Image (cartoon, rainbow, N blue to C red; front, top):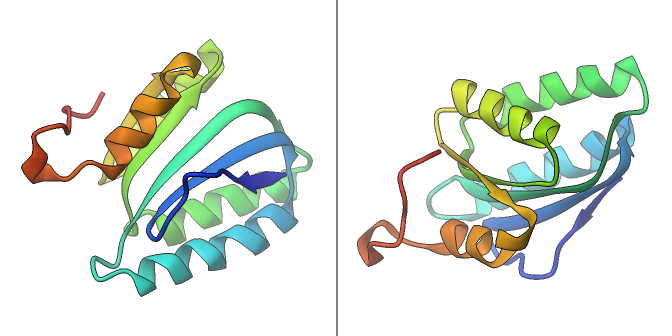
Length: 132
């Protein structure tokens, strides 16, 4: 299941993966993420994924929804912060960085405040590091 994290506002959205992801998670969150992108003047979103409770997908259908969702959202994500809790999480972040046109950066679990700051930073304030 995906839960929205406190700290989310406007086009900056934090989600925590808790347990295996389901088809229903994608049916709920993809339209919501698209709505938030469309309601922002930039037409894009910045997303934090907290991987602490991620247990994969509950079915092949859910994994397929992940792939379809990525295709729909790929041009809408300006920045993606992945808060990693394992080597597998880091590998997911690295894979996302290869295919996404936006910036992707992995953070360790103790760097959650830095992940939020990176998502919320503007280019002009000089706080945006190069993508990892």
